[in-house]
Length: 265
Length: 375
Ligand SMILES: Nc1ncnc2c1ncn2[C@@H]1O[C@H](COP(=O)(O)OP(=O)(O)O)[C@@H](O)[C@H]1O
Ligand SMILES: [Mg+2]
Image (cartoon, rainbow over the protein chains, first blue to last red):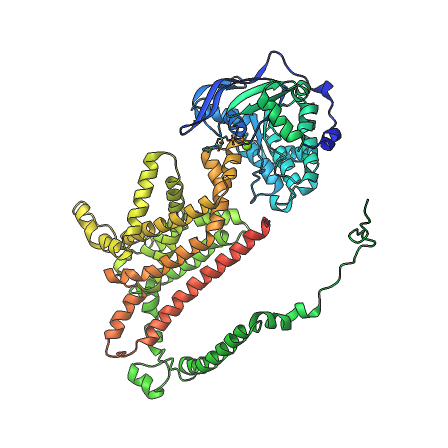
């Protein structure tokens, strides 16, 4: 959020290729209700392969609910969601298929506290991808090295700092070799000094061309990495634009109000 | 600019860590902290010591010093020592207490079954046992082995009728069977109660609430009498088997509620993370949810086990000869007429030993499981 952070983040945009033919996620006229409460209203969003999209907006605007619909942690009631060419329906097979291709990181990490870091990372490859244990461990160590904590592999989540836990959570998702990564406020539960280590990992992912949909208020990150910023309010997409234009020249009054609140606090 | 030298402070050198003062560690400190920390605590400590000094010597005198261990009848006992305990009744009827009326020449079979039970329990209770996998395979076939050993197959092993079973043999059969089947059944019921399939949910809720609402004795009477009306005439459905089923169902309803508590204590994020990784329902239950929920529920689970084990004494009311059922004829027998305390103390001690062991084991397990992922 702070500008000091923004300046620290180095990203190489030249490597971030966006496909203009392959669609990763297509959300068409999607609506969702919690009981009588119309939480998402006619959401339309097309994410191309390799795109990095940052979603922001006030608390309660439906950001989490929207990205949780993409891997069916929440069910939508109207409209279509097509992920990697597969339309989300009640068909459990399709849901599982989509979940295998979509990784997700949560605000509170949600590591499995009764398993070691290594076991957290190998669990899904072994049980979902049916990978041999040995190979799964090699893959896990590879990704733990990428998030720079291979030495913690045999500890338990409770013994790690928040930043380390979030990096493990990212590694755990990557072990499934996902095509798309969803992030729901990955740094908002972290102490300030740990935010950067997590953002660095996410920037690294972006540079490798991962398709990312990221709910965050880290505007420095959005500036450096995103190719689109989406602003949501009251269950609707209010505005979207390229980051530079979005921050310097917001059009809608609610966007302006929101940005003035988070940038000049 | 004002002069703020009065509040400004900069650390000049770091302070070294020092050992704790002697008075905060060691046995002396422990005594002071735990026994004499306040006037009230000191008073309670002294009162407890006085109480012990008053009780213990008399108890030791009665139970050991003046006790009679071998004698033919109560009169003989009283002649040898008029004040002490007459344990002779236990020695004289020891076999009955252990086996009921199990044929004498076949008693090696329940003994062997018990030894094998210990072997079968090893891999379950202790995760560092060598060759755990192979032992688990044995645990899986143990129920069959035990059944053949205890009841016989009428072929290699001579058959023994259920009506001959009794004593602690019966207690252990009912207790161990109830414990080992009520846990998995309770888990399924708890998961069913949390299910979002209405039909399954209703079945589980109805079952749990019905069983919890009815006293165990009633269920046992149903097992011993009422069931005959429902079964087709001519079928004989073993009484012990019926009791086993009832006790298991009864304990599983309580178990389900204990485990439901553990499930509710689990963070919703755990389910979501498991879902997001693509684990199926059963995988996420087996790998993520149950290991954590069961760990939280250990005290309640063991509590239910202990309750079940003690409830096995209720089978004496439907005519099965558990240890309390064995006591009845002894009380009426003129040879031992008048001995009450010794008999109940003996049975009580037996139950205490088992229940205390279970309780200690659960504490050990809790400690062990909490070291791994301490926060
Ligand atoms: N499971 C739920 N049941 C009912 N209402 C919910 C549920 N989850 C979220 N909401 C409501 O939906 C709205 C959007 O929530 P959310 O997507 O979490 O917002 P955001 O992530 O933008 O802060 C909020 O008003 C919230 O109270
Ligand atoms: Mg949210």
